[in-house]
Length: 466
Image (cartoon, rainbow, N blue to C red; front, side, top):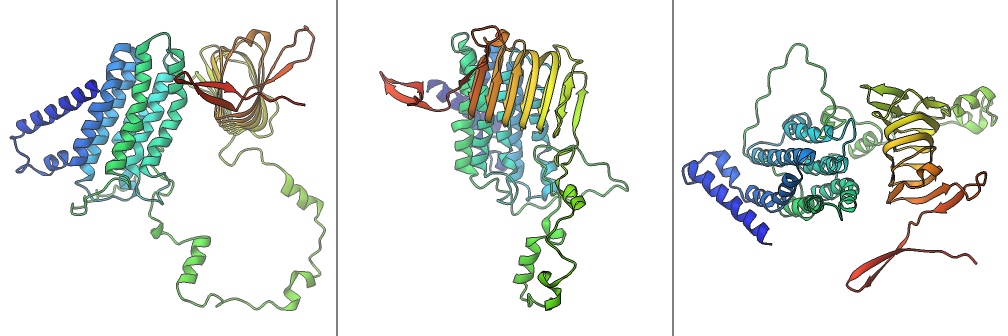
């Protein structure tokens, strides 16, 4: 409590000093000064001083990459403050203008995400927690219920849920090692819950409030040949132009026609008896073989994109959108490379050799067989996957997955298995006999929490069959 009070006092002193340097009064200042002293902006400064100060203090004690990503997070918060000030001085732009307006904040968030790429560091969980949680700052992009994102309060909570998995890993790993890391993880959570959530709830529950009196910025003259569009960012939308600029399609066009007041049956042709399907001689109930084959033939790639199996930048194997492929093999790999498997279905991949880590994301009925991993094997957002470790794996994590079979070898029995929001997880291990069958163990997915001696005790639910 004393630390938070001191942080708020320091923030108030800093604002008073800034006002004195500008002349000691706000009454005669311009629009920037008036917006900077708006109650919502002052509250944002208080929020940063109260909650981010703990994150920054713990980050300085840890140093290294943790301090670096903490400073990036501070840049993102300061950038959001600047954008909130500009919003009070600007009219609401269109989607293209909004993406350009939010570009500085997006660049800082992408900078945090870039630290999680490449070779996994010892502080990967810290970097991932900070990068994933920083997307909560994108609540500022909310423009209405049709913008394609959750309302600001819900967006902040959902963004933290993405980061909480890695934040909990920090708490578990450093619980008895280093209290500075534990403090950093706890402070990071409080920065968003309740910090940012309560701020948004108090001042912007329905999104940012743009100025109604400010003049719209004049559009820049168009060049003869516009450059190609930039890569997709956190704030861009698939529909970059207003829906009113193009004709409505599908059911929207139907409802528009009905509401226009015109006779809805005008232009329709009368169906005579000889036009009905039951009276037509050229229509039978038998489906031709060629027609049936054309409908049942499965596509060779997913609707999400073409299939990929390639090494990118010499560091990352990417396996994407493979469907019905049972003979996928990665054999030319080393311990510095990672494997990322995304959007595959009904396929089998063999990784022959030691790699740094393996991530299986949004796959269905996918089988993965690997030899050794240096860091971890992660299974995220999957359904009905089977993973076999033939060598060693220090960590296996399963997150938001329904149906997962893990086959462990004798060399991987010491693996640490972490599960979250998952069900139907079975682990098969070698039996007592050298040539015996594998023994299956079901990991618990239900728990009992009982309050005893001033704290909750958690035990898995055990089922006994008659």
